[in-house]
Image (tube, rainbow, N blue to C red; front, top):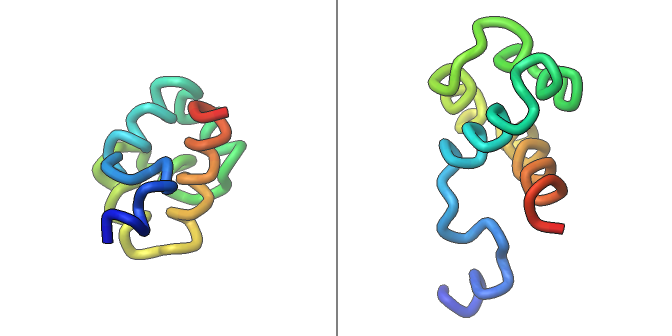
Length: 73
């Protein structure tokens, strides 16, 4: 398993840190414009975002990709 994760830049980074770092960097308004999902545009909270992203793999992938584009160039 460790071999599989060696080249994964997200290995060891919790989803909560990803969402918190993006929200701090962009703010809810810009984050909602970059990724159009309801939890970024309405009822904005880390908790509601985590709940949604854990249930929706397609949305989580978008958030993870934005995180990598923003912080791991």
